Length: 408
Image 1 (cartoon, rainbow, N blue to C red):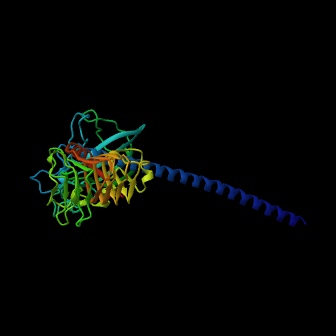
Image 2: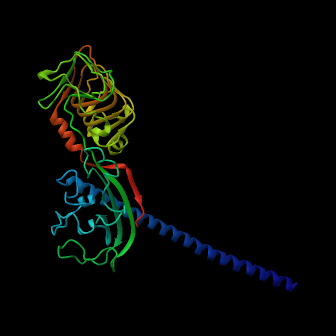
Image 3: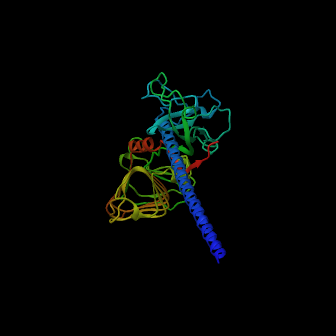
């Protein structure tokens, strides 16, 4: 009997001991899991910060390209390497300096919090390597020069590396603003790296010289007597039509003795007129819409891309300015009182009813301007055209090309 009690006691003690061990192990395991989650969370946070730093470098580089006096940005004529066009310049004056290390490219440090700093490096090419993790002129590779007048410097590939690090050495160089040591130099310590890559494109927009340019290779154009095509002193004709098609039928008013037609212009396809494909232009646009009801009351001065057929009515008129690109048909109904200033490009048919006014220039596949009463005016204005070209033709990021990549 005593032996039985003794064995029972041992069993209970063993169970208690095992339970205690399991609890201790469970607590330790829980602590490990919690610590692992904390470490993972910190790793994600550091990487996200590094990605933000890299993105800041990308935007700085785009600004650099936009601010150059020479447009498009190209290598010197004496250079055999197109990539040498990207050459940021260092200065002792922090306010005008484009980088803290021009031998590398665009390099900048900035404080994130406390002694946590970010550095981005947008590396220039020395033309001795085929690495894609550099800033490169890729116009030829994107077929922006072969068989056309579009120059080098139209398309640039931009790589930007972001580094998040702990700065422990705050010694400055003689310029009093750049640090004497880099993120990788002790006692500084790198926490995370990330890199982004994207392409920028300069839209080489042509300058139309007529109120209306039609691009379709066959007829089907109608211009009624109340369709007023108006041109300023720089206009060459009232209608600029592709000579491969039949003459537009036209009974129209052209104030100022403007010639009715020009018979042999270049066919202004999307790629000829803008220097980019339809899909590329969509990626470069400020706004993309697929439904007329989603448009704001007035389009701001920007590149607006409309996908599909759009009809504007008295209840929903077209209003705005800038560049309007319609991949489809555009209809301005009678009495819609639509008013647009800038350049309108329509791949399909543009139908304009009475009491609508367009200023700048219109390029369209086919045209139907046949108001039977009231008046409709399409006015060519070279100042509006040039302003649209100059302001919207600057370098733009192609959003379709953006990617986050591994650092080599």
